[in-house]
Length: 251
Image 1 (cartoon, rainbow, N blue to C red):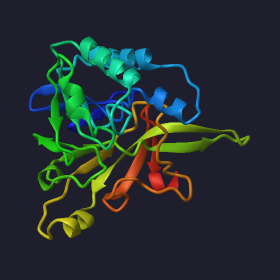
Image 2 (tube, one colour):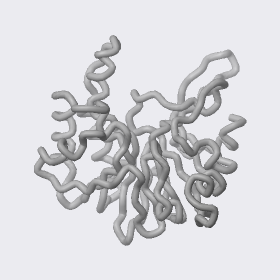
Image 3 (tube, rainbow, N blue to C red):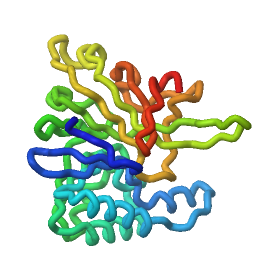
Image 4 (tube, one colour):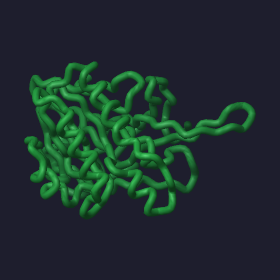
């Protein structure tokens, strides 16, 4: 496989044209400030979030960091806390590690924000890019046709989670990966009947554990992406530790 989850982490590694890349999705810097505006009081976890990501980059000896959208939390102009957190992150990522941001729906003003920092960051269009055999997209819009032609398409946006219950009725939320073959029909209906789509789709868990997510095994929940669930054939869910839960529709 060209994309493999890091055991126990909401991150994966991939070979992107000879570079060893660490991929994460939905970092949502500054989320605590956003939640406080909604009446939820939380201490800031920006430092811990940054150190968590840096530890993965070190452990995996990464050449590149790829964020699959929603690097920040504010959809519009980011506040002071988010700017400070992102500045500290960009300063802390070693210069030897290149940074790519696949633009997501929370990254509306990211071009202006990135220009303020003394760090080169590759920004991609919202419809994603393809690097070798790997497609990179956030997932809030339809991936470009050339992205869909990759062997593996990686996306964020959904923050998939499951509700797990024990024998005495206790319940907990767990972040999960979704993996399965791309189903060509919805993409061909959207683009062209001759579109080549025969790769795998990997839906990343949210890196930020405060960002909520799409409950894949709770009735009444719907996916956020315009091409899910129709674009995912026989998808299976996996916990961060690698435990296979089977067909996500029957967890």
